[in-house]
Length: 204
Length: 200
Image (cartoon, rainbow over all chains, first blue to last red):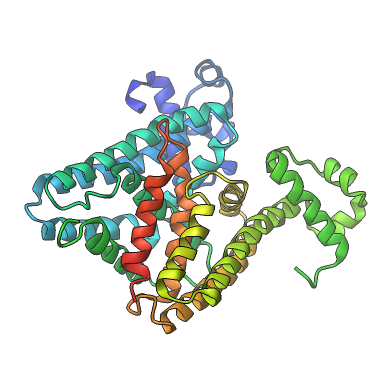
């Protein structure tokens, strides 16, 4: 998504993305972005209709960057696996990598982008395109696994794509808890769902 | 909320209604005071500032929604005569919620978290409600396992958090350019409940 942007525009978005790694959206000011990027105020307002547009685009970009890396990992996985067991073992690693407690920042960025998109038409449109790209990529992977005889043929690939993202993002609710659950117990629930429902031993 | 002062409740209820109607960003302190007929002094006696009221109201909206689901689950559990009966009652509850639709309550929960990230005050409001919901769901699942209907190998607390998580995150299903068919979503969730979570 970012590749198509004008270099100055890209620098500004990159700067906000970098700031979002350590700060909340409300803490990012125009002054801070100009100082960190070394770009003039005039340039900023030439490329963006207002400062919020820059913030919104940066959020959508972060949203899709996190998801892209997951899609990439699953793609790699399908490329190397030779059996259902290989696939399940690989997915266990993906689950542990994507649901780690340290990834709370990623979960936050995604819910923040969702919250923004419900209020801003332009963010909603941008996000819808990115969301579609991610969901259809995961759906394609599931379809491929169905064709290889591993994925449950009765499950809609699109529903699989939405569902796997849903619990990964929704795990954010536990980040608000004083008493966090044991992440490994969560992973085991996910493992079991993959083994018995999504990729059952005998395809239903 | 029963032990709270009635003026405080009136303010929260007024803000809840306005958020449901127009979204929290368009709710102003002037409008809340005008509609509720409560004085500015009272508002600032009960809340540190106006965003505090909005935060409490957002948490109240999603808390009501989850409490409602909890009581539906409880009554499904007490009235069910068999595991099959329980499963069909659970399906009625989950299909009624139309997984992945952006309802006012799901949005309130997401908004509350989006705001709460940088606000320790808000984070603790959410944390309290979250703990209450987790405990409620844990107790229900323990009861389900006791009846021999739930998977005894799963951690009851984690099951509760997992079920909430996919519900919260499911809103992405309606954010794409291409929509997901509700029957496809329901089939996935029903099968998951029957084959993994409620397979005691």
